[in-house]
Image (cartoon, rainbow, N blue to C red):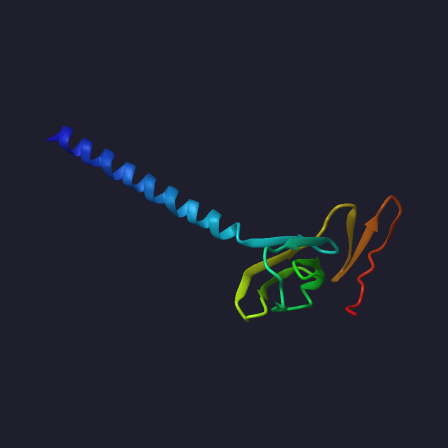
Length: 135
């Protein structure tokens, strides 16, 4: 009886580990569908088909510029998550992805004074970080 219970327990553990692995695989696959960009950095998207329109959910987070009919340049503007939809001449969706923009902390220092926060770019002398307005 104890031997049979041990076999059932091993089967249960195996199935639990298998299902956990499948769930983790799915989570990684979903995460890989997000385009990740840092603020003030450009990301090049090359597509197989010509693009007619590019739609950004929130252009305060990411900016898109068409370089040519098959190349889009994305620039991270501020921290956040939005979406990007790219359509062809027939109105077919070529791409529908999330875009996550995170802070570029390379050579960046934050100075806290009470509730005020100043972001400084230290390359090598620290000066206030310039945030360009949207044109």
